[in-house]
Image (cartoon, rainbow, N blue to C red; front, side, top):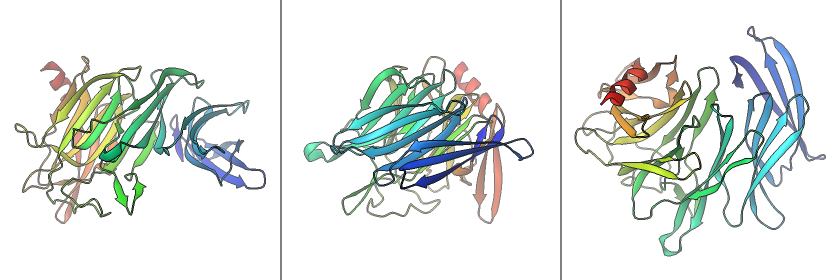
Length: 353
């Protein structure tokens, strides 16, 4: 289900193995949830060698992302678009010889209708083990390259609990390429991610459980709510439009009066402007919230939202309710409640300082 310009759209997929095709049926509804249009789009697809990772609608186009493997063994990431009227299809492929694409996704920047494709590429770094390299490509809506495909490598000397990056002047949101992935018997397991877009209020969010270094990496269960675990340093990086590094900021544990953000984060958009909300682990207290935004001078600003540290906040359920406010659910013993935050006031206050 998608929210397309304030109206419901439903995409269903039917696979025909004998034809090696996937038929995507798009059903659009009016404001009374009455179906007003049904469109079927056939897509070449081999379920034995390909995986469909994402589908979305934008500007009367069906956009999709799939992974596949070539006859020569190369791993391929393919972004495709199909016009809903002419049914004309275009595609763009990216290949990797040795590494599979993990957590692959595309994100649409509404400001200029560009598309940002991102993925994690685990690569061997000799005796140092596996590096989690982030792959980025910026395309026009016609799938022409706006910037050369880029690989961003983490600094092996930085022991980071969380490593996030954002592209300048983009509403595509923050990208996680943290090195704290889980391994079970040598198998690579990306962290669990929730990804969705809300076209109506331009909300964009991704919730991830962060596994601290002090917590056993062999375990698949997260720390219990309210349990304190030091999480190490957090790095936030800003890239230029051409995907080259612009500046970064390192958040260290318990520096000054601001506790380091903790196990969970969530990013969202208000009026096509990206924000990042992080939970805070505070010793002997349940937690708090910190807000990250980019100033007009491209400074990475950290703001303590002064949330009640006795509450346990449920970031995964954060909602954008208008152009200024968000609501975050919380629990406190046997009670639950909602916290309303005026994002605009925090941004204006910090931009003036």
